[in-house]
Structures are given as C-alpha cells and as structure tokens.
Length: 131
Image 1 (cartoon, one colour):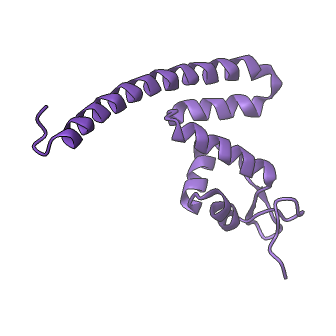
Image 2 (tube, rainbow, N blue to C red):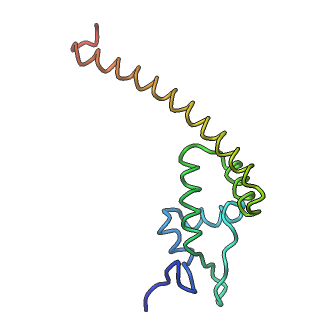
Image 3 (cartoon, rainbow, N blue to C red):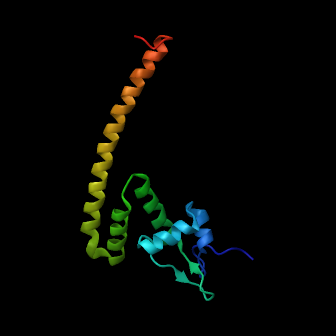
C-alpha cells in the first residue's frame, strides 16, 4: 500500500505534512490553532488530512517567517487570505511594508558586512592586527 499524496482523496497526514514541510507536528498544530493554517479536513477516522495547497501555503508562511515577519502579521495575512479576493489590497500593503523593512535590514547587514570585511583585511595584512 502506498502512502497518500497531496492529490489523493485522502491527502497527507499531519506526519507526512510535517516531513514534507520540515515542520514538526507540534508546529503544524500550533499554526492551525493560531489561525495561520486553515483547519485541516478530516479523514473518516478523524485524522487530519492536508492537500497540495496546504504545502504551498506553508512554504510561503515559512518564507515570511524566515524573512522576519512577526507571527501576528503572518496571522493577519492568513486571515485576510481566508476571506478571499476582497482583502487583496490589505494583503498587498502588508507585504509591501514587510518588503520595505526587509530592504532596510539588508542595508544594515550590508554595512555590517563591510565593516567586518574591513577588519578581516587588517588582520590578513599583519599578524598582530595592527595597520
């Protein structure tokens, strides 16, 4: 017997979704409880079942998290997403604002990287680190 795929009628179990997404089952349940992940459909036995859309959504959520978006904003985005097309402008504004913060952070990191490179260059020129 093969395990269900996201396209099968049974979908993915929470364990399979955890494995494919890189999240723990605990994290998936937390995201569902927090309103970030829509409540899963249930199989006849009552176990959670997820589909390919859930995998894609989780990949996007993880990208937002990776780029430093606060959970409260991810939750707000998820709520607007669940409401449909009427919230497209709000979602756009939220993503644009996050993009601006990310660009500012990248500038700070670029300056810090340059300062480190400058200091490393000094140490590479002289054994005692003096110019």
